[in-house]
Length: 161
Image (cartoon, rainbow, N blue to C red):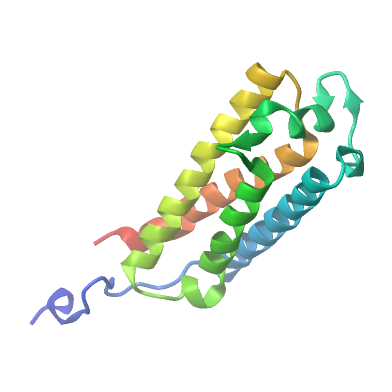
């Protein structure tokens, strides 16, 4: 029988995990994004003055985080960030990266793709709906973008058959 026939359903034969540095980068970016999302959530539920950020001109965190665009279906975007980063952190753990199960790689790729899609929408909202940029939000956006790049570069070999 061939190696492919002998392999479990959903696994990739002859697969090896990505470089440890890339794996730990995804952990660090997920943890940082979770921390900043937590900070933004705390500011949302307490006071925008909690945000250490400019409040005038093009950079205005309070304007962005209190705008109508700061909620989606009534849920604060900062909370959605928390909800997104928790599973992303789980999918970034070294033990999960070591899994030869292709469904894990597909889930990681799908999750990070959904995240980058939402980031594109949020950047649009900041620039064209609110007319201001939040540096803390931009930090989260950058973390998601870097996670997207890292997952694409590290995870695609796992998806090949």
